[in-house]
Image 1 (cartoon, rainbow, N blue to C red):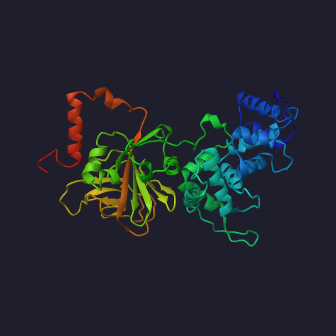
Image 2 (cartoon, rainbow, N blue to C red):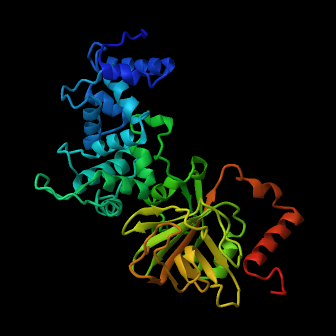
Image 3 (tube, rainbow, N blue to C red):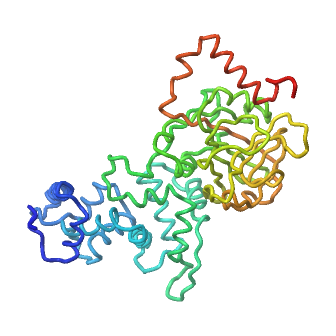
Amino acid sequence: MGNAQSPPTDPRYLSASRAFSQKELQDLKSLFDSLASQSQSNGKYISPSVFQLYFKLHGPVGERMFDLVTQERKDQKLTFEDLVVTKATYEKGTKDEIEEFIFRLLDVSGDNFVGRSDLESVMIAIFNDILCIKGSEDGSSSHQDIVSIFLNAATFSIHDEKCTEEAMSFEDFRSWCTHLPTARKLLGSLLLPPDSGRSGTQIPNLLTPKDIDSNIVLLRKEYAWHIGGALSQHELEDWKLLYHSSVNGLSFNTFLGNISNHEGPTVLIIKDKDGYIYGGYASQQWERHAEFYGDMKSYIFQLNPKASIFRPTGANTNLQWCAVNFSSEDIPNGIGFGGKESHFGLFISANFDQGHTFSCSTFGSPCLSKTNSIIPEVIECWGVTQGLVQGKNDAVKGTVLERFKEDRHMLNMVGLANSSE
């Protein structure tokens, strides 16, 4: 079973090479030869500096990845066999094998514990070096705050005298990945070429009207990156600000009017009087209903002081809620996600002046704020532009039928299309 590159006798390499097609092995060999030729090694190995430059992995994360790829030999020489063995595990292994590799990667200090400082180093590298999102102009303060919200989503349950700080168990790590799917995607794709569209690196283009001060916008790039972790690639292109309460006023009718012509999903974000920021991804349009509706693509999330995503558990289908102008006390007017009537996972009343958030089985989510009762301070809604529908409205904008359809859609949302109600 000879390969063109004369495989060595290392059984790990022989086993790993079977995970690749002949074409894939040839491509890996071409990549290795190219990087080795830049490493002043007579083509025998890849140096740490060339490795880190090519994969754009710098600092502690780049050093730790190089250490793992070279089987922790500490000889600063990455061979072709190393590359094949690592990629077979990291990219083509079982779910357990891949996550075990990522867990080891997080141990940037190399002390066999994943502490808070390790995770902090990784998140700083993700934002600074991989996503190229820089902090404040003076370099750290606001950026440190945003890093902290991702650390706050982690549990550190190991207390060991050999470790100078509390550390993550493997189960702690898996739970963290569940709540931060974007981080999991990115950490699982770091040995792909940076220009190939690494999974977990996409940040939606945030489109805001020119007359809106960017300082009042809640949705930061880091938040958008986090929220997008549960979405497909075509939903991570353009997000357009449809409504902002500081500009449009805390008005339910204005909210519905501003979003009436957007046919795609929306991202609702709320900042309450306690400073907590959270919201939900509505996979379907906000439309007047007397009961729950929606599909299993909807989810809710936390942004600050902790970042977490909570996707549907399948326990029920109480996903999305939009009730307008109902007189029955059994049908609370407002918008919400999950739970049940009067006990939602997240709910904002039709007056936009109060709401609540409870733990709910729909998303397996906790109370999203400091207390169950919430008073909204800022409400934003972003329209998710999907490539397949972009430009559709422009094509028919001038027709009488289309204008009637849009007007009727608005009337339906505010409960006036059928005067008998």
